[in-house]
Image (cartoon, rainbow, N blue to C red; front, side, top):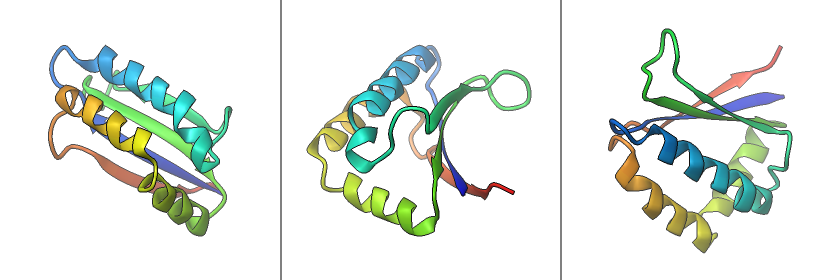
Length: 103
C-alpha cells in the first residue's frame, strides 16, 4: 500500500478557496478514477510546513494503480476545468507529488 501525497502552496489569503476546490475535486472527480470515500484526506500547514501548504493524500494499492489514475485524469474534462478554476488561487510551480510506502 502506498500513500500518494499532492502538495501545493496557496496564494496569500486564498487557502480556504484552495481547500474548498480540493473538496469539490474529492467529491466530483476522485470517484471517476476509483478513489472513493475514505481513501483520501486533506491537510493544511500549521507548525513546521508553511501555513500556505495544502496537501491531499490518497491511499493507493501500488504504483501501477497510481499510474492508471493519473492516465484517467488526463481524459476527464471536468478535471481540466477544475484545474483552471484552481490556478488563480495557488502559487505557480508549487505543486508536487510525493509517494510513500506504508510499512
